[in-house]
Image (cartoon, rainbow, N blue to C red):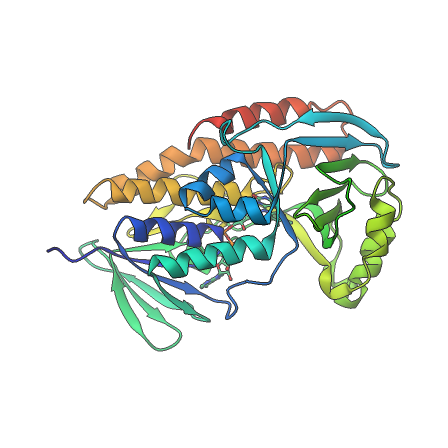
Amino acid sequence: MSTPRTVLVIGGGAAGNAATILLRRAGFAVDLIEAKDDWNATAGSGITLQGNALRVLRELGVWEQVEKSGYGFGAVGITAPDGTVLHVAEDLRTGGDDLPATIGMQRPQLQRILIDAVRASGATVRLGVRATSLAQSGDGTGVTVAFDDGSEDRYDLVIAADGLGSTTRAAIGITDKPEPTGMAIWRVAAPRPADVTRTDLAYGGPAYIAGYCPTSESTLYAYVVEANRDRAGLPAASYADEMRALARHYGGHWPEITETITDPAQVNYTWFDRMLVEGSWHRGRVVLVGDAAHCCPPTLAQGAAMSMEDAWVLTQMLAATDTWDDALLQAYYERRIHRVRSVVEASVQIGQWQIDGVRDADVPGLMGRTMTMLRERP
Ligand SMILES: Cc1cc2nc3c(=O)[nH]c(=O)nc-3n(C[C@H](O)[C@H](O)[C@H](O)COP(=O)(O)OP(=O)(O)OC[C@H]3O[C@@H](n4cnc5c(N)ncnc54)[C@H](O)[C@@H]3O)c2cc1C
């Protein structure tokens, strides 16, 4: 019997967890290292998962849990800042007609579902561990990795899923870095008023966007997007006050939501970034997936979807051949780049139109074209 191929996955977010589950199913030996001791099991407020993300989650075998924990819906409301509904658009079912158009979820719930699936897959998981060096073998058939716990191992392939600040990307000589788009977001989880049954987005007012999305029967997540500010002038203790000061200008369900924004520790402030690594996503036997290769503002809510699609496509390609070489990893990039570039460019463009105050921008047209493209299988 031949020895199974060995893979190291660096980073246990959406991309790394998905890759690990699928590689184990294909029979490979997988080690996953994750820098955070708690594997990010409690971090974050909410996430919007569209059909094409749900299609990958179904492939991972966790669709039933996702459906049960999240809140499914099929439309988005566009409102004036005072809450008057201007337009309700049906969401396209990008994952196919047998999946909802959209599921809102609490981020920690999604992470815990994926953690359970990784644990059940039989992968070896080490938390609180980082790689300190990666040495490609002279014959190009593997990588020797040293870890910060003093251990060392050799792998046939390393998958870098360590997110937008990926140190693995830098370690293999890819110099791209995320760049701020000029926008930032305030986010918080809150109780769901009974008649919030879809995402509502208000454009304009004191911020660019104020929106909320149901994440379960009892919760939603709410966000306000504005021009990014110097973080040095924003102490964490002021976060609830800052978000409330923006949110109180909005109508609809905002007054109810705003009342609950009291604990600064529950409010998250993040700048939007963009990055797209072009040309190839690998060097030797180290290959990037997810935000390590590309990131964009969440104006289309497609970052995690693209990240999990990368993992799905790459692992299918790895499982389909015994020859893991430069041509295979380049073919993975070629298969992904058009789709990912379209999403990154559209996401950035939608934000830029708001920054530039372009009133007649064809946002629905660009969204519609991008979502139609995403209905195709990756
Ligand atoms: C404000 C905001 C809102 C968003 N909303 C949505 C949305 O609604 N829908 C959507 O689809 N996407 C959304 N996204 C995008 C989405 O969050 C990302 O695209 C997705 O999380 C990327 O997954 P990933 O696994 O590539 O990276 P990450 O989720 O960042 O995971 C990387 C993991 O690697 C670990 N790590 C980092 N460095 C190391 C290291 N050196 N060694 C080991 N481990 C390491 C980290 O701790 C982390 O667990 C949003 C992004 C932002 C900023």
